[in-house]
Image: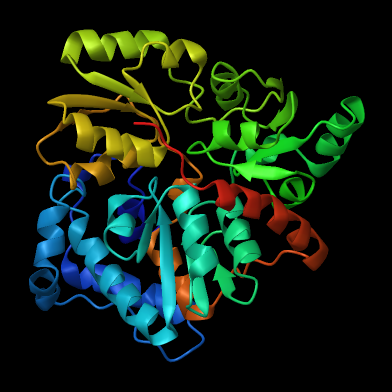
Length: 377
């Protein structure tokens, strides 16, 4: 039977929270018991004290409404312990925009989309980097910062796009289309990046494709992002049948419902289907969504993307009402405060990339970074 604090930590599991009763001493006992069983170095475990609510009052106010009040006393000891241990280790924590608010706002030093995290990793001076995201992001960080130690709190934080294509698939595509350059979305494994001529993110996919100087480009693996790019360029794209499991399930009907019922502006990520994008008021990358909100300042908006994105933007745009026809990424939610702490404590789950793969993948990533951010807002 899982301890009560572990039950409550999984925000994506629906529970009748108001019917669960616990005391702070019980919570503290469960935390200490858990760490006593797993700790192998002398590091102070998370400890509850009333002083934490005072020390983190500003953070608590900022996250009010984003983190359930029942969970906040649970998160505080972990946040405090992670911040202390992070300083002790000299570590930098990088968190993707799809991370839960207690991670994104509570412990991260660097936050943003895939391109932001890649740029940060390439210029990071810290010896230890913890990636609060999915595995391909940790691989990317290691490739761009080969002399740094890169950790990921959970090795099972995967990605449906990254698992949809292999290096052998890329070689077969090249054989079918001799001489045609390959652009791979950053949501791919290091092995796939190594077989590519360039990488891209949703913030610069169009510009990377056109920078290849070819009338035809193999674009992998996201067919929806590929279709979105193809509609804006004269370059012929050869697409792969990959999709993001979070974005592919949005429908045009949901979009129309959000607009009609809530009178909301609709902004969608280009990993959604063409039918969904056709209903949107704006289509853009994770970072471009924030820029659009800053520029337009709508009264009410629906973000057609991962749920935590809207949660994390609420603190930046308190005057905007967010309605959420959103979907959770089960892979991003593998990252939790306890496994971030364990990762730092034990230096566990170090990410490595074979040197020959890393050198070839680095060339593809460098081309992406040379193009940089090209969001159109």
